[in-house]
Image (cartoon, rainbow, N blue to C red; front, side, top):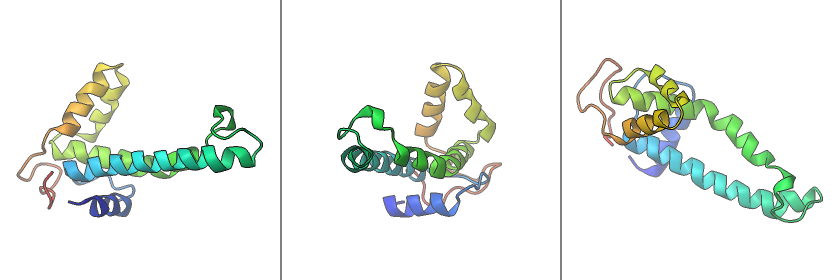
Length: 131
């Protein structure tokens, strides 16, 4: 799965928690979020901050575009994370393991990195494009 297809798939499945997501779908989505965040930070620092009376890149200016992005991508990010867990045969409820300080996030990261089940599992058929 390429970058564009992965991002389109996540957006198309905006709040769909059933099914599975390949590694490439998940990690391309994360890459898209990082790139978008960097671009928005530059726009906020160079354009938004001076237009509201702050020095360019002044941390006191706030980050309204980042907040808007967070609100828009929260549900699809959560959904693709749950589908990624499904690809490894785990329930989406395992997402709450990240509430365990430090070790929970590491376990979740390990599960996201590992390849999913090659065959069908309880959560659906193997993604068309294996990751």
